[in-house]
Length: 95
Image (tube, rainbow, N blue to C red; front, side):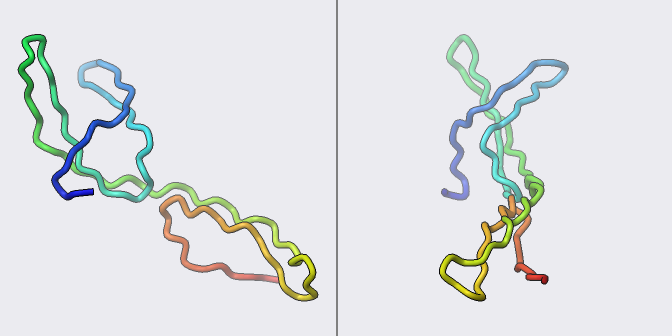
């Protein structure tokens, strides 16, 4: 990804007093630069100045249920939690 490179994105838009578009596949806790290109029937086009924003982090998921590691007497395992951009720092094991 290059700093000043823009590309087309999939979005579903609705028209009211302003256009509102829902962009699919945005990542949580990520920075985006967005601009709009309008194309006229004549083939002429015009491009907006870019706007920038950072998406919010998603709600982290719960880790999996701890289980005894197969064939072990004292090692456990669990499915890791999905941090959804919240930057998981570490796990705390409690007994």
